[in-house]
Length: 424
Image (cartoon, rainbow, N blue to C red; front, side, top):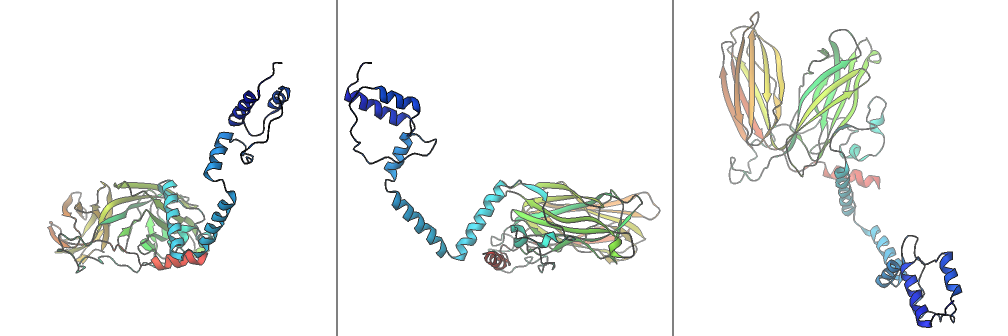
């Protein structure tokens, strides 16, 4: 074999070191052994540490130049690790909130049934999952906030009409609850229990449906479940919960009853692209299923309206429906019989700012097939009230609407922070 010069061999070795892993294979060792050349002098540079598998010599050289002193790197990392012990609680809470935002971005948006959320087996009260703490799920109390909190705030600037101090916010509107199916073949069933919403403005129960076992409601499969709430507007801050526990009364004792639905629905959405959206879900239970339709209004105000009925000429059936917000979705406010002057219960709906609240009254005299229909449309605003008088052959209707924005601050910030700190 032709002998190679010393300089040629040095160049060959450098090329092999830059293009091959640090530990040469058997073929490379045989090549070096067969070369007839004097032994190489020890390298002048510092000894090169073994590179991790999968990294070539060139990458390792760059890493050595960037941080030649490995001991200094370990000391700096240990100092950073020790510094975390001195981080205040507020910084830890902020870090957890940032992590929650990252999880919400990864989370599938929409409406979903949350795991471990049943009341009857107690799983909803176990564990320390984030939503159980943030929404104070173990507290069964009703929300203390009322409707119309900012109908007349008194600090509007420059005035109530052009107010810049109070802004609309994302709100939820529950449009309907329908009994989809039941495990009982006979006609109407007797339902009792509750459906409530929890938001982060005051994460206590804001009841939409609430009936005791002594005050059941009769519902046929395929019919709507009459909603008596919410008590106030539902604020949406990227997430909200719908909690439910409803049963079918069939016996003398509660132990004989059938569980219809039990658990918690989570509603999650990314508000970076605000738009009106509808969420639909079927809640399956042991004794049947309930269909729910929820709307998200990204820039909404609270509309609280009351209807007073007077000058009743004769007994008639009345249905009141509403179209509200930026969604062409109708929901039923009242259905019953009117025989004398009275007032309908107060109703709270969410409406897009400067949108139109449409109210539709359908009255039918007993024994008559012809409907008397009248409607009114009211434009939404931040504060104040609106009054409208509607007259028909059967009665007169006085509609009063109070407008309000929702508070921008949360009254439970300290409680949430305390809950996080307790986990540490």
